Length: 433
Image 1 (tube, rainbow, N blue to C red):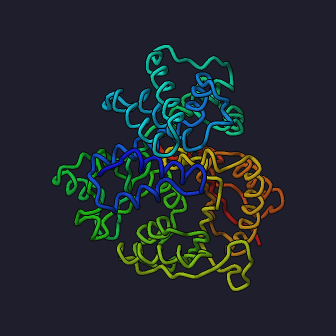
Image 2 (image 1 turned 45 degrees about the horizontal axis):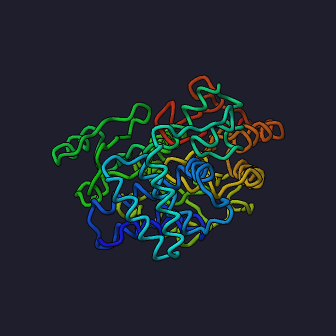
Image 3 (image 1 turned 120 degrees about the vertical axis):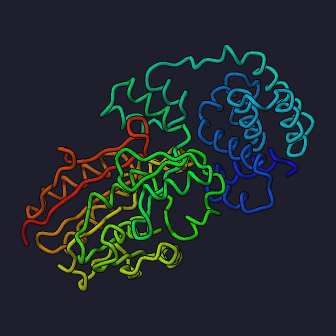
């Protein structure tokens, strides 16, 4: 594919300035006629620049003769791409990085822009072994690992400085490719053997009994195992949510915020296609995603309903034995998979989301039968979206109590400690009317 870096430039520009999602942009690219090596380079550059934005801009500010705010955004992105490649990529020759960057500056700038880019990158190349972040404390963490300060403040409530730094490092690393075995079609050992026969290297997950880590998942979507519905792509932390709810056979289950259906279909497998699962979502598009997964995984006990979790439904009252509230959240536990979240979430968003979460949990509590169980989960680690929501709910609802997980009120999972997405899970029981 020609103009590899031009395509990378477009993707980064779409993500930073037009609200696009990196994974969706890369998926569109993957479906085009592109060589796998070209795709991997574009994926590496785009992901790396988005992950390391603050650090790259810090270097630009220290080395630029032009004030940072006066650099045109396209030229800025070209510089970010060039610096990332010089500092982080070993297989791309330095002369090629600079040459391609200058060509882009010629196309999207002018002769002066090209000269500016050329001079900047050559200077950084000469001094790359001596580049340091001349800051201390939280400001060092913010720049070195390119994380928003409100996130750093949040994790320092629970972690030491050294532990927080390890989490920030982990957030910038590539996550494992984890799949969840569909127990309706096969079992973990048999699927592992099948994939290994096809040349894949596969390991069992440590916490989820249904998880496998595929070390090199190239072309795995073309395998018969995937097409036959033997597995679903799902992080280990996400898989644990359904296992912790652990509904009995024949139960009535509500998945209140179910798209794209990974947890609903997992619940179906855990129940061996018995009982009834009602999977709800407000979006027709997302309901279609669930429908597609139901078909491929061959679940038979899931019914779909378009429903807004924030709006109370009288027809759901006291109807369900088990309820899953995988609440809409900030997604701050997904930095490894969706690095753009660093730049499109703000601290004030957390407060707004926590109010939505409280409304959804209140509704869900009234849908649960006495003696029933409810799991509340989020793919974020913030207290405002988890502990604060739950403990406030318990203060106002004495007919609920926490069922501890591993002797803890909350199961908190972190990339640095568990090699999973960042997740929070709590299990409640309704002990009175």
